[in-house]
Image 1 (cartoon, rainbow, N blue to C red):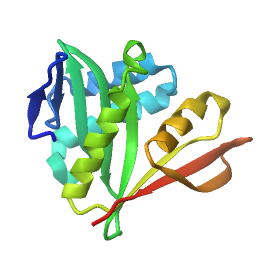
Image 2 (cartoon, rainbow, N blue to C red; image 1 turned 90 degrees about the vertical axis):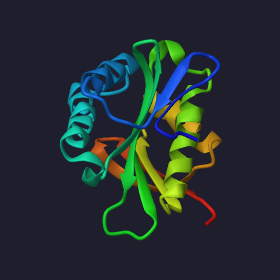
Image 3 (spheres, rainbow, N blue to C red; image 1 turned 45 degrees about the vertical axis):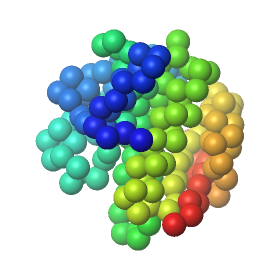
Length: 170
């Protein structure tokens, strides 16, 4: 479990504290994934900037994993406004060279633990139906998320919004 900053045996540093250089590191990380549009990359950094300005009251929380000075993964999540126990995972990304080594799964597990500690019981994630997002959809399914809904043509013609949910025990 993340306290503030931890270092595990394989040299990865985990933290849930936002630092000044993080907005640009997040943008670099998201660009490296090849999955996000330039607009999405910009917004990902802006959410980190909002946290720097307003602190946790902004509603966005983060977990970062770094190796040396390189951010290799992160997640942005927060309580779903006007709900009692629901949370959204807004962004999750792992640097291209570090994919398929369990880092994304560990980020998600740590995120779920923090959400549970905050009283969250339902976690929602949204993604695209495009073929390039098939590995993303499989990732959520392998980690216990269930497809709850599909909103046809949400992002564009033949690009549906897929909503996954994971229900956690109290």
